[in-house]
Image (cartoon, one colour):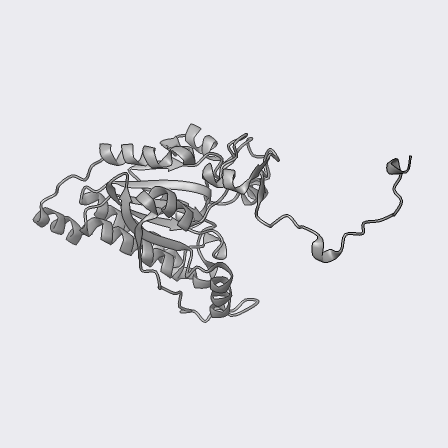
Length: 296
């Protein structure tokens, strides 16, 4: 019975007739290896349906699912990094920035915007790790400072979404100065009685953790986020000891009192709405607010 036998060997379908699976159609969870469609993964806000692993997402994604009807106005969108130190490693700093801008479509490692979230006004600054590791340079500090100023002048709650490898080495001392600048601006926001919520995502390390990321009225985090100052490898090599299981995970940090709570990304919008409703800006007389600002 010849129909059970393969008469011709090999695949004879012409190349032009072969059908390829389109790129970006499927998602495989890096933790549990579960496979899902990208459409389903996006519907779940880039979290795994089985193990709840939270993928890193860009600032634009946060803006899209936090702001009502994906409508928002971006602040200081065209601000670029300068090269105050004429820094060169394997390539010049301006060339590195230009190459990163071209590869990512971003201007720097943070984007800020304002809009409505469940009908309430909100200012958001969100970091992008893919721009030189989310490193904090002069532009990052200045954009965050301006976003805080906008929130203060318009009496709107401020949300900071941190994701960073720390200070930007190409700007040295200029980068470290952003820690003090952003902290001072947050002090002014606090004295004006305006809520500040800090969301720490994977990873939040270095000078960002040591400044604005830990200064919120509420410090919250996504599940499994790496949170710390120095990385686990550096600490282990320094002290010469094995670290506790899950060291510097959001769950570990919460257990040791450095976070208020952990929130699933799918619940984030409603949780933030509840917090902002509870922390509605306190009306401070203009004269008193001006005196407080002058003391800083």
